[in-house]
Amino acid sequence: MRDGSKNGYVTTDGARIYYQVVGSGPTLFVAQSGEGDADRTVDLADALADRFTVVTYDRRGLSRSIPDEPDAPVSLRRHADDAAAVLREVAGGPVLMLGLSLGAAVGLHLLSAYPGIVGKLIAHEPIALRFLDPVEQRVAREKLAGVTAAHRESGWRAAAAQVAAVLGINPQEQDTEPDVTSFPFTAQRAANFEFFLRNDLDAALTDPLSLADVARGAAVIPAVGQTSPRDGFDYLSALALAEHLDVVPVRFPGGHNGNLTHPRAFGEKVAELLRVTAGDRLR
Image (spheres, helix red, strand yellow):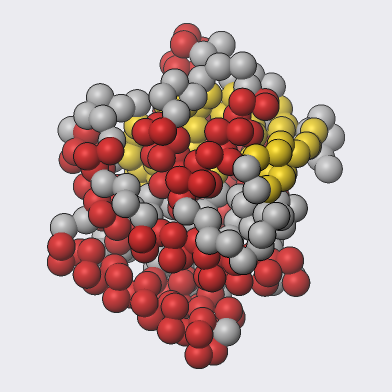
């Protein structure tokens, strides 16, 4: 555990959810993407810990957050329920939130189901297929069906490569800041990928969240990666959300996984967007 950080568990319906807290200042809750657990945010959390109390967690089914029934399906709304339990445990009022991909969809569910628990949400390329028009949605579902087929036929490694291709990520050639933490495919990460592919991908495909569930005046900042593919379904979901809210989407350093490849610049953008809120509304 990093110096000055603390961790703990909160009991929810059917699981114990692990969380980490580091830093000081207004509470910033970070919900990771895909199979990312609390540890995946280490560089970004360190970049923000001098300005925010950064809270990260393992989603149900990942790493230390083991459900009572490991084979039971988990919806994105259930993930939002777990996140709300963490926030009630660690925060005394509305928090700031950074949601990344699947984590952004969880954040949007939080806003809808738990009014007042999130003061402002940066939604970076949410996996929200029902935000797309029918043609875009069909293309997205076909691409994700390819991921499911790769997993079924060749296992998680083939599916992981397919996920990267769908998101426009080339792990061998992507630009990064110096000295970023690497995340090799350990046995734990392999298990997380298996859970994501077996549960969370299907949860995203069947998630009922639509733009109608997002209030027009919601305190949401839609965000996209500067180098993300312009035809990526997650990128297009962020654009659709921005149009719905009548705002301009904010471009963040890097691509879909810019929080991992450019954590310092990404963190500066987060701080820039949340500075007024952090200083004036939620201190």
